[in-house]
Length: 543
View 1 (spheres, rainbow, N blue to C red):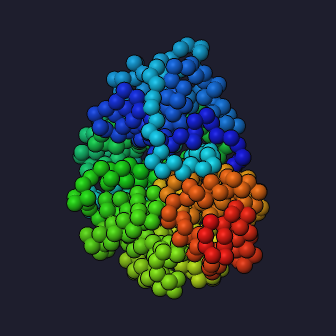
View 2: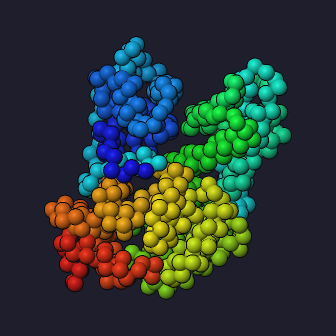
View 3: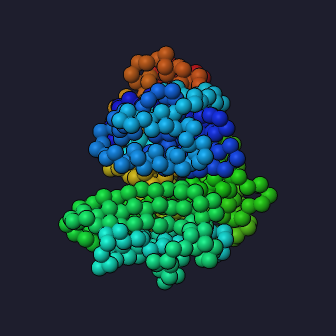
């Protein structure tokens, strides 16, 4: 990961872009059509659309797109073609009017946009977009997101090659079935549609599912190409798609690799779709699952008010379904967050409440990965890093595609000064959940890992991403100001302190007067030194 790489033009602009009735939110990757329907674009497709919209009236060549969207990575022209195709599909009937292809020159977006001004204006140090970093539930299918993996199509032209496409379909189905947040249709039902020209919406209606995953496999000589796409069957909108090209020295290794990559990408795509669906529903008409998803949305916003609202929604989810383990795990994290920001209960009380919630989750689901991740945070907040790390690694082992375990493990390793391993875990959490509830915490801990290594420029770049994309995430301003202070950039440090949201003041006060149990004395002194150099009067808590 190269945190010193400058951002693409306009990348710091995360505000909605508006053009002739459309609204596009670059950070969320959501395009709102004039009729009010939403289309969730893949990250790269959204990046391409953003560049084209920001350069409306200019011809943007393929080489320029390659440099901006895939810097330092070799990709073929097919990647751009796929993104353009998805953009045109999302724009619908307006596509011919808005987006033109100029042969041998590039692409031209014909209508200029207007970006909505930031509500808070707290983007202090713009940095690259975070996307560029590299339950035991007694739910009914209607409450739990449901998906069917229909048999991938063999495009090789040889029926003998069906074993490869069928094998990938089987493996993806099996891996998705491990997710405790999904209702996955069994293989036997899914394969009943093999070779039949049945519409996606009809398949979904007959099986009672919300999402359909379909794909194709083509083997050419010693290489295999797999295309996969996830469709919201109700709207028939493609919410995720990707392609995998691999050599075939070992058929089964390649099959496992592709299946794992597809399964890992599906969970966050469905989670984003479910969260957007829950946000659009009236508060009075939420199921337990939707209340939980809505709570996660508030967690991702990072403000104190949002965290309190999230806790209310998690409690509501439990009232609607007392057998739902995940809200207990999230409430455990809420109590810890509340007590470590200096605004809530004493540390001992917060830890006690958090432990009770985590144990409640495990009583409902002994193999709940989120609950083990919560226990990792709890033991870490007791200063027991060894036990905390064991619980974090247990969480990862139970569900390698859940970002919670990777995030907890990354946090613990950061303060154990194992920066390389910590960043690997945190980057994995970001890849699994690039725009979700864990994103701002993962980005902040990346920054802390650099700060502890005295790499202040990288710390500033990482905290800059948080302040731009999550301006209400108060904790990020602490390490931004301290990093700037350590470099002697006092004017910018003062600006960071001025632009910090009100909630950051309580957190500053808490952190300068209290050394957290997980933080070594020398690391706490290092933070205080940076804040003093930034102009924060540590002695009396005033700037």
